[in-house]
Length: 93
Image (cartoon, rainbow, N blue to C red; front, side, top):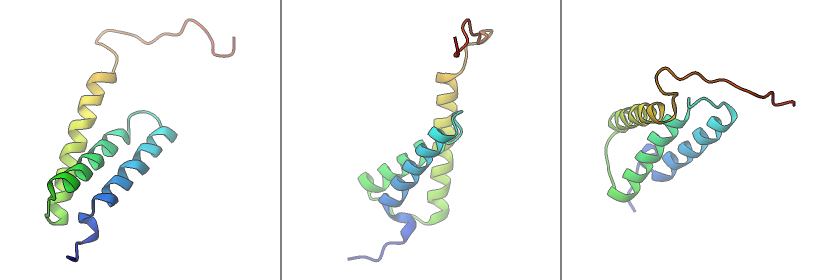
């Protein structure tokens, strides 16, 4: 069995994605969701492709995929241009 560095283990990136997803639930606002998607994408790449690269390259891939995921989610979940969020009822009524 090869001695693989810890950062190249797929389960580490999968665990990071899970933790970041839980943090998103605790602090909503699509802050951690992009990072969770990036970590999950790196996890899938390591698991499916068997990618063996150094830590700087993995972090670069993670950062790029996280940014892309965040931009896509911002585009999908944001209010349309000119649209205003308003509430007709109070939650306590």
